Image (cartoon, rainbow, N blue to C red):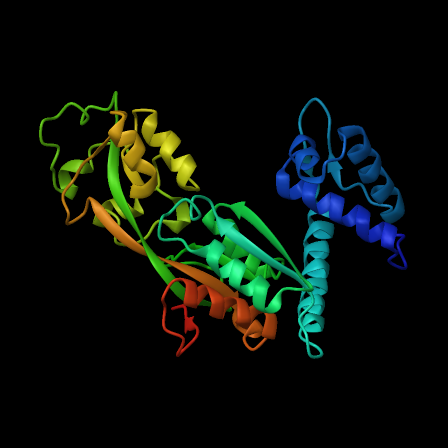
Length: 318
């Protein structure tokens, strides 16, 4: 049983450090995130364990491992900080003006898409409403975007839409489409084929890098459920796997085109299964619908991308 009877500011700070260490999976990852030396991180973790009277994790030459007690503290701390973010979001909506933090989780490589007008939306929002609003934008993989919004640590997420997800309580606003093409790289058997236009059944004989649980159903038909191959969680991760020469995989065209131009990648397949268009959407929690700061930013996002305002939000299928 924990010895902690009351939570102080020090306890909250130490808990936040512990959460970041677990999220990053190591002290070195947390060091970069928090800009704190590993020795200070270690002292903070030791102090938290003493205050709680619980050993939270193992660390040493064998690596970093969270103990069952640490997992429970981690989950409880995540719920606590999500509740704090909910309170801050609610408080920002009180009174005549807007104030507080607006956290945006952004999937990697969304910003590099020429169709992305996020900077315009940010600029207009800040001019009109943002005098006392502080924006915080974090780049991450798509599945992390959904998780951050669902748990409440980010108010808005911008990510590629997914056909199936275990995340619940979310709603989405379509912004623009992202085009992906099936690719192989130099060193792959298909790279030197004169016309590598095969059907899905023939393609099934090649190693395929999938996107894990984010793989859309329209990718490659029967191959979409292939789980034995490599997994690329994020556009850059997928690119690295395909460039290795072992895998074929879908890569956003705005990323692939430079590598195709330099001769390192090649588009393969037919239009029937070798190309795909997915919606890029802004995601929020349904419970936050009507929160002034969030709704006003979503309106600027919709305006910047030329999307209709009525209805403002389209509920996701889940």
